[in-house]
Amino acid sequence: MKINIINGSEVSRLSVAIQLSDWFSGVITYFRSEVQLNNICKLKLLEISNVHLREKKFAENKAILDKIEAESKYFTENLEEKYRLASIRLDSISKQLNEYENIRDGFFRDTQYGINSAQKIVAALDISAKYLDSLLVPSSPHEAVEAHNAIMKAFSEIDIKKIKSFSEQVNRASKKIPEMI
Image 1 (spheres, rainbow, N blue to C red):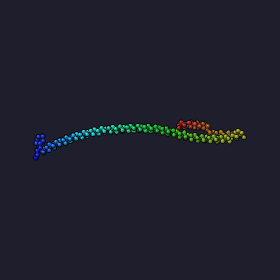
Image 2: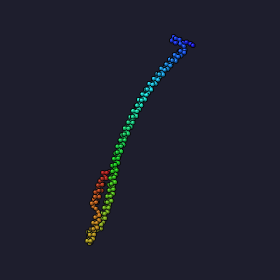
Image 3: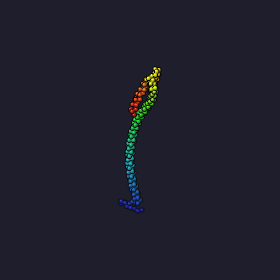
Image 4: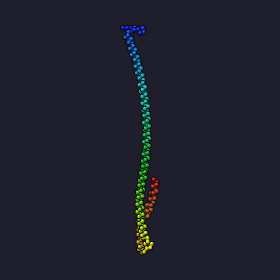
C-alpha cells in the first residue's frame, strides 16, 4: 500500500477514495437537492401559471357565453316581437278577407236580386208597351181596364223600396272596398 500525503498528513489511498467518494456524494446530494428545489420552484411556477391561465380562459369563455346568451335573448325577443306583429297582421288580413267575402257574397246576392228586379221591370215595361196603345186609344172600356190591370199587376211585383235599399247597399259596400284596400 502506498501512502500519499494530503495536507501534511499521511493517508492511505483507500481513505482518500472514501473521502473523495464522500465529497462527491455530498456534492451530488447538494446538486440533486438544488435541482429538486429548482424543479419544485418551476412546478409551483407552472402550477401558478396554469391556474392563472385556467382562470383567464374560464373568464374568457364565461364572457363569450354571456355574450352569446345576451345575443340569443335579444334575437329570441326580437323574433317573438316579429311573430307577435306578424300574428296581428295576419289576424287583420284574415278579418279583411272575411269582410271581402261577406261583401262579395252580398254583392252576389244583391246582383241576383238586381237582375231579378231588372227582369221584372223589363217584363212590366214589355207589358206596358203592349197595352200602351190600349190605354192611350182604347177601343173599348173593357180593353182599357184590362190594360191598366195588366200593367199594375206587372209593376206590383216590383218592390221599389227594396230596389232603393238594394241600390243604397251597393253604394255603401262599394265605398267600403277602397277603405279596406
